[in-house]
Length: 133
Ligand SMILES: [Zn+2]
Image 1 (cartoon, helix red, strand yellow):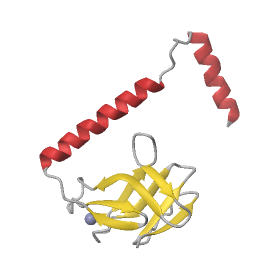
Image 2 (tube, rainbow, N blue to C red):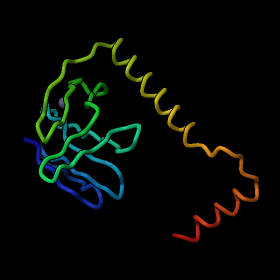
Image 3 (cartoon, protein in one colour):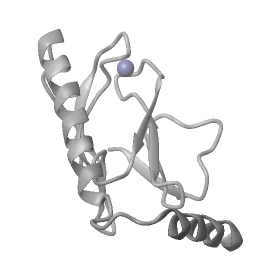
Image 4 (cartoon, helix red, strand yellow):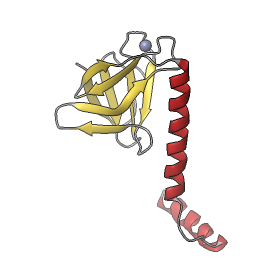
């Protein structure tokens, strides 16, 4: 069972078997469950991971594939339980990466404003953002 901890910022030292979730930073972090001790950062966004918290357990979707680590572990976090998935081969990893890039591009282009803003409106918007801080 994976524990979860809601935190404001991600702690420097993280414990095994704990999923740290920072809502302000829209990020979750945990140590790779295979035991290799590498930190796995999963940004939460419509095109990255989605977190489900049912009041007791947490789930992350899609699966976590640590292709960049030596262990290359692949698993789901489903209702705070680790469900190991089949390891992907290099071709599948590459395919997955490409699909990821494509869905990000599609999402980003759907987020663009329909009507082109004039230069001055953009500047005003920029100033408005700065004042908020
Ligand atoms: Zn690992």
